[in-house]
Amino acid sequence: MNTQVCELRDDDRRPPASDVLQVVQRGLGMRPKRLPSWLFYDERGSQLFEEICAQPEYYLTRAEIDLMNVHAAEIAQVLGPDVRLIEYGSGSAIKTRMLLEQLTTPVSYMPVEISPEPLRESVEQFGRLFPGLAIQPLCADFTRPLRLPIPPRAPRRNVLYFPGSTIGNFEARDAIDLLRKMRNEMGEGGGILVGVDLKKDSAAIEAAYNDKAGVTAEFTLNMLTRINREIGSDFDLSAFRHRARYNPMAGRIETYIVSTREQQVRVGRARVTFGEEEAMQVEYSCKYSLEDFATLATHAGLRVQDAWMDPQRQFSVQFLVRA
Image (cartoon, rainbow, N blue to C red; front, side, top):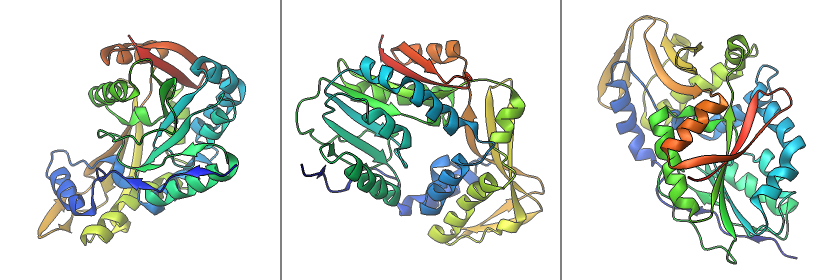
């Protein structure tokens, strides 16, 4: 049977390079300064994130894979046959392979990824692994409304798959907005299968975002490399450092790029001043209890139908349906 792989499709809603200057200018004009985390994911950033997932301190990927090893068949049974699987932020899609292997007669797999090269690699990989599966890639920003391609046949249900812990990168209000958007896109009878990192010992959480090999620090500072390349800024990476700390009151890791000295950086036609030890916020990584996330889902018009955890109870995958 021939592989049914569609052409890589760009829905024209990704932030274009021409917007990066405006985004950076706006973010550096805030007090405190902040930049959106999607700026991490150029080609090099995506490669570095894959390296982060392999670091010994980064428990999240191992925990989720352990979870899927134990529960993938049960999850597939809950989803049922004839599913169209739409994955947000597909990346290398390791967990997705484990799920697709268990699904009964899936209609199609639609990876949605903002970085074109990781998406192409994912499509090629899945074309080899699942030669009879229709693959409909979409190069897009999943936080914006998506124009979904027409599936090859009518699915019994749409399942939006959001693995990893990316939902934790959104503050509560933004996470609710994203879940509402997903609720609309999944349609009647659809569902959302989402990975949620759980609250645990704060030292273990902090270590995951401060690996000894320094890969996470390189990943964070690569954002400045991207900005230099795309808009002609002159960030001196040696004058900035990565900082990630767990805020137990807010239940989240807070990641910053910190200026190590007083300096000015060219951004467009302007010069932006940084003070010594001035911190620029670039990412949150929220952690939840099962009760916390159930409450969040309720605010988006959803309810948790099923939830699974890895054997060490560090990570969860939850299936949300309309309330």
